[in-house]
Length: 153
Length: 205
Image (cartoon, rainbow over all chains, first blue to last red; front, side, top):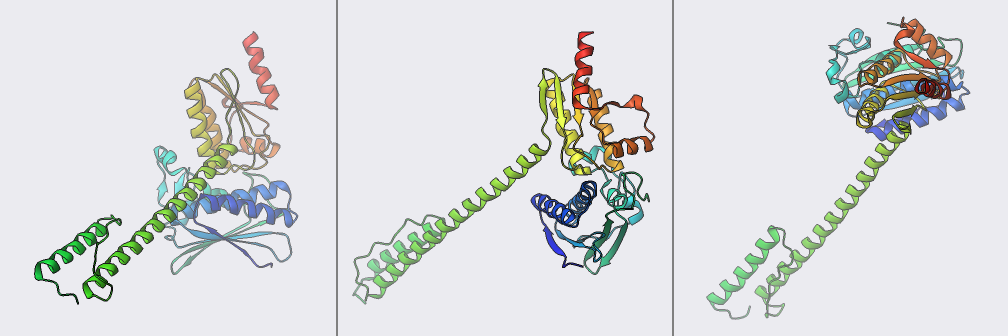
């Protein structure tokens, strides 16, 4: 595995930068454009979640040793998931359904984490003494290739 | 130490206190005037007070300047962020009452929320009648985002405009069908051109 690239996430600009970097890593790894776009969405959702729930954190991006895909790890010092199963449900945060009235304010629809799961091939949450780490892998080919046909919770 | 009488000494000390009080309240222009030589203790003290006030003034000016520079930089970053966001979601009035929203790059949940908000505001402000959301540049969308997009088209309809999608990628088309949406709920066209053509035809009819 190549040394992971560490991308600090402290503000909206960092999300844009992280997305651009991941786009580059994906292309360099020889992934198809749609795979790269999926990775970009995954990175973007993870990064916005860091900003929304933990203020700051980082993304680590690396190419798998066999070159078959990309791994992203999102680390932040925010609280653990109150209930991961609920957080993964669309339209929910980690405590339950979010109020539609709050969508504008939070600029979220409670679907980011669900999207991350659907657009990746492995998804793991590790609780740290202070904070948490979400590790995902998206492989290049022969996986669930279309949106909505990937794994559902 | 020069031979000062008590009144004179008191006068000089109160001058210094006034200057220090000015400095404490942010006025660094005050200086203590003294005719005493430097080897006089009171004279030396007066000059030391002046020097201290002068360097406090310099430090304050420098701090203000740095803060100003920092604020300018933060402002620039803020402006760039907004610019990037606007660039990624341009809403163009193609014709009177007709809006086009060409979506390029990538759509995540947050962007779908921002687009909805921006589009509804423009439709409302311009009293638009027809909106084409062109997603030719989008290969991948998560189901939840597609769902939010479709809600956006419905919200536009509530404002009294028609909203159609064009340039749907085959994979996204599959997603929409898998979501069990009936096509009655969603007007679609193969290309932006087709969408506009349909509106023009309708107007002529």
